[in-house]
Image (cartoon, rainbow, N blue to C red; front, side):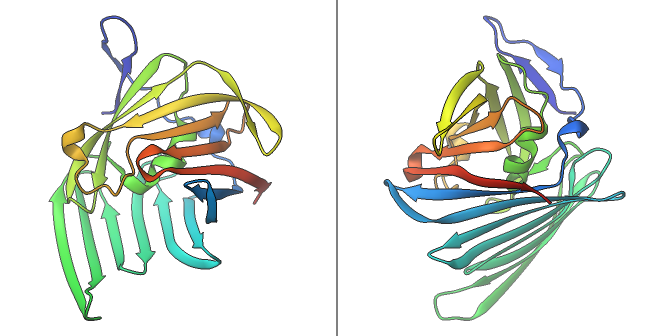
Length: 236
């Protein structure tokens, strides 16, 4: 079961309420990606909501070419991932989540151009999220300033479950593309021992709008010197 840690002098565990279905609204967001201050591409986050499924996609464009395409299907009741497919220039991986396992087929192209295929089936639990789902799920959390959520996240690179901590900061105002937004700052971190092969993904700082439906306004990845900011949003 996912639990929240209340950010106070003596942190104590408390049950994490169910993810907020009111925030699950079909939309598409486009964010500009800058590395070392230079624009290198965009990332498009899209959510499709049906009667019996919730589907999210992340498409990264680097200099106008697709560099990564992730499609995630969530259980419409629990909002937990049930299927994730991640395609990039170096690998394609399919992951399927059940109540107590994750199974996957991973295809990797080596420097010589040959394809290596790896299959695995590992124990997990129904509360574990996929690493790629964090950008989608962040806006579904019951965000309350001062709360700290402890999540279990499966990482296909290491084939292990990584503890992730999401700390919700106080409401503030940020400026994105000359527009002012009320936002919560979310600090997403992992223990240093869990980070040797994460390619600089953690720590991550997310800015999520206070007003509903919530919008992912800004992503900061300090170890990559990368910042992504909202350019546009539309209803799907």
